[in-house]
Image (tube, rainbow, N blue to C red; front, top):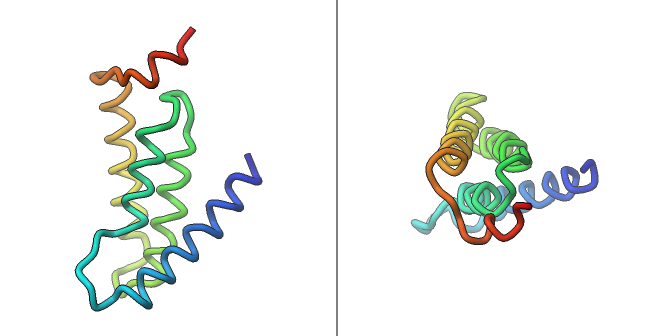
Length: 101
């Protein structure tokens, strides 16, 4: 788990640097938000790796933005929590149904 978190920190750092330095003049999608959505949609509902990724991604977006510290952390964590709640209560994805015993 620690190895996955360290790789995630490095990945989000490079992604935030790329987004804020090279893609600043283009109107593109927020790549960190896109990866957090993917992490939350394609993990098991019992795991919390998507929430951890939202905290780390929000931290790097806060560092590289001009908004107050904690702005993106709260938004991404809340968005990740909303995805988790919706997936646990209302949606049964076929890919997740295969892995349940």
